[in-house]
Length: 237
Image 1 (cartoon, rainbow, N blue to C red):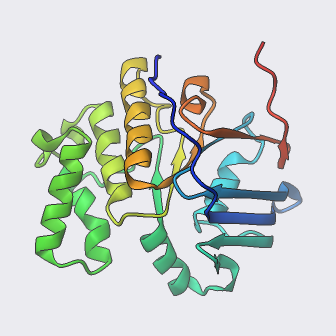
Image 2 (tube, rainbow, N blue to C red):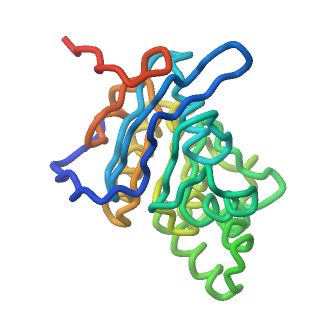
């Protein structure tokens, strides 16, 4: 897989997401053991590590899907642990876009309707929704698939629609969990290039969970996890 990474400068520090000493256990098993990190506006960060190192648990905590046992997570200065369920939902809708390996498109909705749904949930009026959906589907290269159901789309097309949906509400941060893991090498390279371009264009920060060196190569830096902690990335000989 070949990705044209270019020579994008690292964005000027302006943290949009900060985690401080985050811990999480499931029963007797401690998965996160005090994780701290900060991601700046427009920055792309690869989150790497072996299976079981805590990557997905950390992503779920950062995205507000799961609550940590301890520590603090802040989006644009708002501490997620201080919010009730409604407040957390509002932050997730406004500030966080999520891209999954298996797309998670609603099967009974068309491509356009999947992208439109977050806008509906945020109360955006119909005219603005229509314009936003049209613009996003065009930008990710599937304008001709507007009325197609997910079952009528290829894997690469589904991931493009999923990216458009994640960007619908102009989030501060995109959380991507192995977004190319279910794609062939050609479509994977296209998706990585698209994520890089969109991040540069919109200033949206990207936290990319990946096992792929090609995926990590589009990022400004790498955070490596080992046994629930931030560790030094392994050397690439």
